[in-house]
Image 1 (cartoon, rainbow, N blue to C red):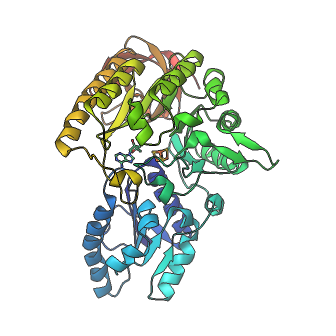
Image 2 (cartoon, rainbow, N blue to C red):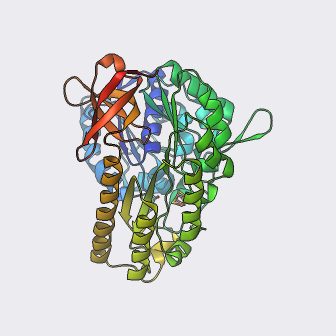
Image 3 (spheres, rainbow, N blue to C red):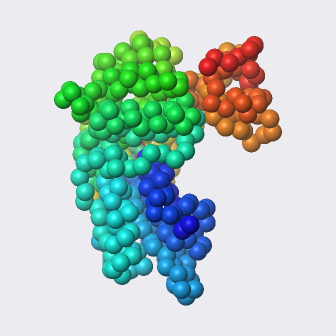
Length: 447
Ligand code: 5AD
Ligand code: SF4
């Protein structure tokens, strides 16, 4: 067996892609290891949405280069690959700056990895494969080899929204949806291997518009309906959604499809209309409020989460106050928040009135305090209730399992390993910093 080390850095989509690459290389005799030393192949799968991952890649490559040299001294050969949207964005620049790199592979080309490896092994030169169209890559990938109780399933990629702060439309390309039949096939395979929950992934997942074999287009709501019919699948989630793409049938599905969980990650980024406009979000804060009202009219208990950016260029104190007000008005179950950071090549990076770092930090701190208080309030509201929990894995403490409520909250419960993969009623008793704790209620097992 050859040793494969994949280092993942970034979003869930990247983690999913890393697993796919490992599956894809298994037939070539590569087995995953958890240390880079002595590996036959090293893949750095880096995303650069949130941080300056580009510099991280170069410093990481600087370190790994010596492992490669060491292996060569012992007469071996280590292939060094850079993958992910960093690869897509930087392309040849990476090979130019770090000649130890053998392969640069963008997210659209993973299915061609085996071929590229063969090529790289034959020639000593560099193989570049970053501009390959379409989602056909998924259909030439092998079956997943293993899965957890909760399984990621990519249904959509890319983004046509062009928020002025974001690199995704440039690195992941335009919005593309996988055919529903291919998704259903993969979902059945996952269910067959023990998955009970599907988390549908896409940069703009609710823009899903899948080309079906009958020449019709499927919406995300329709896809969720079909997935709900698969034996073994108890829960369906999806992420990330754009407010503009929250279609009526999807909102309705939250009231009608019992397997669709009452949880929605719906990033708003800011509560100020001026900032939303400058971000090119294509909605106002009131559009968002009205949308949330419509969603809650169908599913009153839905847990809402969001992403926020503070310190976007030109953000005034009043703009920031508007964000706090929106948070108070909506009431989030949890949320991610970031300081604005410049992404080269994006419109916002050259906007005037960049916000000083200290001010960004202070605003982030204030926002996070408010969001954390809301998270605690939401978690506390579960105490005393009996809720359905899907058990995923052993918890750190002996004889306990970690499961999740419909609202994605982690719950720790005294239960035997036979409960993994099962749904049971749990009475929630208390909360610690990041999780809930409860006990099995009655006989408990639901499915
Ligand atoms: N600066 C800060 N945060 C960003 N995000 C995306 N681009 C930037 C940036 N340039 C955040 C957004 C997005 C999440 C995935 O990352 O909030 O929703
Ligand atoms: Fe980026 Fe905006 Fe697209 Fe989200 S919707 S991926 S933030 S451009």
